Length: 390
Image (tube, rainbow, N blue to C red; front, side):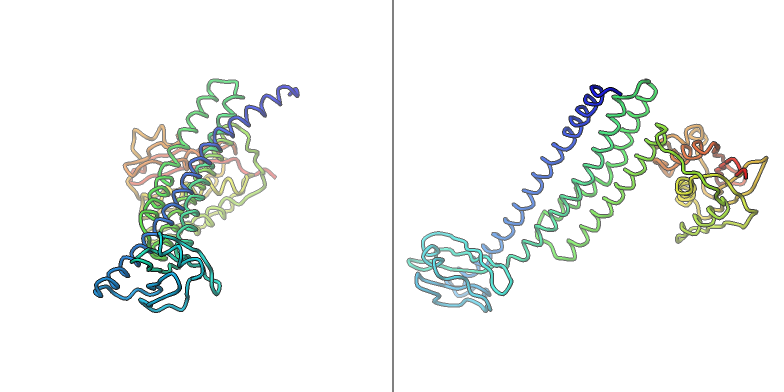
């Protein structure tokens, strides 16, 4: 590649990255500001509520005691309207408070407070204290939700930018079409977790909530972010496999032991897993990739069946791995498209990227994979791989 061509590609990449980053940063900045505004609004609403109660108490005697609140004049406090172990900085605050609403922030003993003053009668004011730790916590939780959303958005944008870059450098219409399909898959895969993050963040910011509620909301945001991260990894794996950029690190591997490990890792309530022992079956494979493919097969079977079994053997000079289940089987019309991205495998829904990655991994190893419905009910997926040659 000539230096000029390299410079053109770098400039294209910079423009694409800017197109992704700028909207994300703008939206994140707006959300960040909205979090701060909501926390400040909550703080002022709390101060107004305390001052309103103080006005009723001083004016009619019918109000309830308000801790951290005083009736004052321009020289000092006249009457405590509740109990408090903290006092505001009276100097300077009183002269302002008797004339117009005012606020002073201060700290004492490592704690932050805001003192709000409001004119009451001629030469008098009401002053109340609000602890700033609570709104600070609200800000932190809201900011964390914004950051989580920005991370997911940037992840989606990164995938889109990478696909767009590959599209610019692709020389064949077939390759361009595959990249466009993968970009559509990225939008499909990210839609649900992004909706969860948006809904949970909006719910958290709608009104002040308890610490337990914020923990629950942030747990939902984290789970959705983790789901999005898994989706991004699968999308990138699918992109690399489809483009031939992923190089296999082959080594001798016991396929029978790999199957047993995957079955043990997928142990879950309500599903009986069975991996009968068989003869040693050795293949030349990239262990992490092949494990991911077998794991996808087992997890897909567990989603639709009550019993799943995995068998490994040698047939016709090939290593064979079969995953059998007692579920409803595959839709006959869907069988030819079962290993397409987001192809529907039964009335249970979409297979997502899992089965398409299985096919890509198996084909990269020089093998084949087929799916069928069993005569006695349920489904069977058979993977065939070349045996290890010493």
